[in-house]
Amino acid sequence: MPASLVLKFATPPRPPLPRQLLGAAAQLFETADSDHHAETKPFAVGPVVTPAELHSSTGSPGSPSMAIWRLGWLGDGDLPQTWPPRAVRFGPCAQQVMGFDVDPWPFARLASVGAARRVRLRMLTPTFFSRNGRDLPLPEPVLIVRSLLARWNAHAPAVLAVGDDAARELVGAVFLDAVSGSSRQVPVTEQIRQVGFVGEAELRLLKTASAGTAELFGALMRFAAIAGIGAQTTHGFGAVEVTR
Image 1 (tube, rainbow, N blue to C red):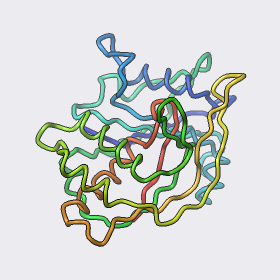
Image 2 (image 1 turned 60 degrees about the vertical axis):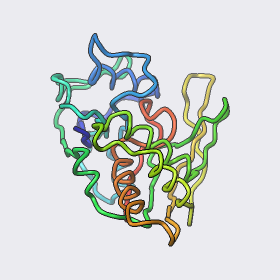
Image 3 (image 1 turned 180 degrees about the vertical axis):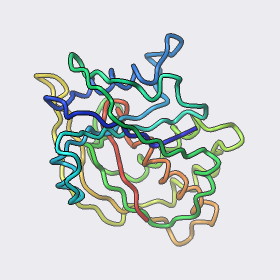
C-alpha cells in the first residue's frame, strides 16, 4: 500500500547526486524480478535533509549529526521484504540506518480523504515537466494533475482507477491561483545541470466543478505528498508538501 517513508542516518559527507538517490532507492525497493527500465516505478525519492536544513525550514534543531531521507512507496502491495534497511548506499558512501518511520496510506484511504477545492503545494526539491523533448520548470496545474493521474492509475487497484471522464473533468477545472518561488539548478553530472521550480503554488478548482471532482482532487493532492509530481521523481525531483 502507498506510504510516506523516512530513513534516519548520519549526515553524508556530501549531498547525493540524483543518480545516487535513484541507485540507493533501487536497492531498497527493487528485486531481481523488477523492470529496472520501467517508465513508472513504484517509489518516489525525496530530499536528504541535513540538520542545518531542518532547522532552517522548521526551526527545530534536530540531532546535530542526523540526516532525514524522505521517500514514497506507491505500490498497492506491501513494502518489500528488505524494508527497513540496515544501511543505504549513495554511490561509494554507505550510511548505517539509525531509525525509520512509516505512515501508510492505502488507496482506499486516499480515495476517502475528502473533497478539496484549494490546496497549497510546497515544492521541496526542483520540479519540472518533460514535454516533447523540452523541460518546463514551472508548476503548471494541468501537468501536475496529469502526472498524478498517471501514477495513480499505474498503481491503484482497478476498482479505484480514475476513468477518462472523471480525469477530463478535473483537468478542465483546475487552475493556478497563486505562485511564489524561483528556479534552481541541480548538478546531475559534473557538466550537466537540471533546472526546476522551488517554491509554493496554490491550485484551485472552478466554482462549477462537481463534488465528485473535488473529491478526486483531494485524493490526488494527498497522493502527491507520497508520489511527487513532474519528471524524475525517482531521482529526487518533484518532492512536495501539501496543505489545504
